[in-house]
Length: 78
Image (cartoon, rainbow, N blue to C red; front, side, top):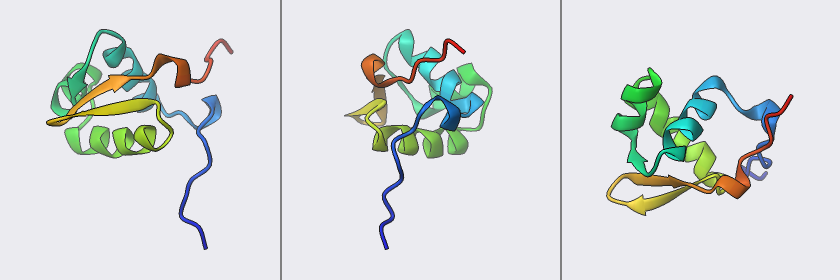
């Protein structure tokens, strides 16, 4: 049985995921900084970053820093 999750689309994104995207659009950041700016716990942000990393939406840069892969973010026009 596979544990690989399907690729996230706009319907899979949670409010926290969009908050992460917005913070990272301003530049790279770590989970505590994202949590502070987005209004979520650092633990929850780390969990969501892990999911976003699986789909290449965020890229780990090392030392806990993340950057956004803008071209992988689903279109949220609706």
